[in-house]
Image 1 (cartoon, rainbow, N blue to C red):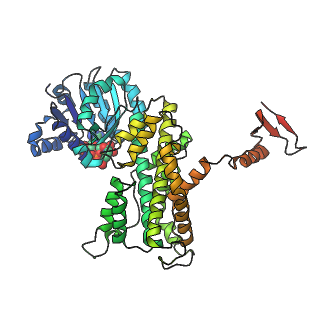
Image 2 (cartoon, rainbow, N blue to C red):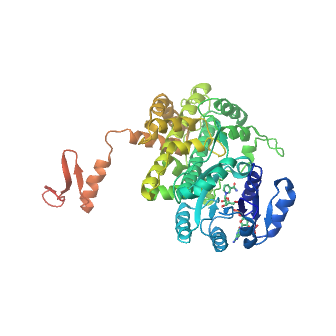
Image 3 (spheres, rainbow, N blue to C red):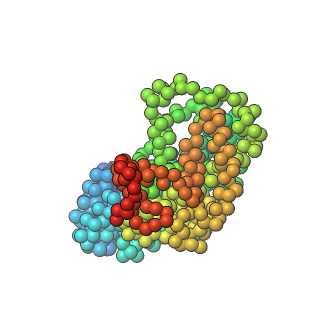
Length: 481
Ligand code: NBP
């Protein structure tokens, strides 16, 4: 038993994570994969890592010092269940099994309970940053017990990405908390990407800028409040010219966005929790619309506004002024999307009894993951100043940012409406903002309607209790509780 940590599953993520682990002082890494050729290939390709190879789970268990700690990086779903069950059969009470795949958090809750009953520690850990992150330092979101964290924490801290000298990992909360937070990370990623895509669409097709010009705009934005990995890579993609055609690559890429499902999970979970993650939902739906071939073909002939010539269009005005307004609109919408994501975390924490430090979540997203951004520092500060902050976008810093942005935000959406360029995430974020800030909402009317057709009752602004109006008779009101 020479190894202090093991990795099971040596596809892209697992092999890179194993190399990352092996590169840290003090670690000896045992590796195991269902198909043994991958295990030996990895060990041969990276002799410097001095991996301890195992061809069977029994050998793998024997190669680990106790308490055993193993990270599973296999396909999410049934494959993960199979591997967990194989490990559980050869591990002993007190050992730690970590699932680093993209599990649904409810599966993680179930697996944790099953293994806890057998005396085994199970930790569902969200790992973000793809292949590169796995190798050089991902953002890691582990759940599981405090006991497991004591052993696992230092190991994960040694391989995580570093931001301002601090590792991008924290004990998120118990059982499924880590995978839930990873799911929200991915949902926010969807919203962020959609917002950027809408900004591009407006600059390209409402303002008439070329992809190269827009790449420069994004490079400029990446020096300001929007500075982030996604803005950075957007500039790279937009500036890239296709070698075959000489056209901007973005013009030869088929405009149908794919997904692996974590965005859908985020929206499904949020709907279940009753949390409006409208920015994320619009992003998921926009990908669905882009991929709905038959509907798009059938919708292709529908009328839109009379085309303008871009720059001279009344909705746009001068190009630089419009670019600045789009930057503000993107920033404001992004604040809303993140605020909604953090609302989902808060609601899930209370539903599932997780104690989650939201400032810590923003902190561990600052490096190693796809949504890494300067802006996350502001979120961490907001939660450090006010740990029980009920609404992120109402924190003083964001309040003032939204104050500055709200007029351009409205104008940009107006320009989209006038030119027929859809801005679902910009628009839904503004709609959320305009609802959340209103003293009274038209929900009073909806309660009246519900009472009319279903006797669902309503509350009054001036009295306690539930009331019903006898709509079908004399319309007298009675208190019904
Ligand atoms: P894959 O998700 O493609 O899974 C391939 C691995 O699963 C191989 O090691 C394969 O073994 C193993 N496996 C399968 Br499939 N069925 C198995 C079974 N029944 N028993 C044992 N092993 C089985 O690998 P990946 O892309 O490296 O991702 C690993 C995990 O990390 C996934 O959960 C993924 O969602 C997550 N993740 C991926 C990324 C990313 O950027 N790719 C980022 C973050 C998280 P074999 O070699 O014998 O077929």
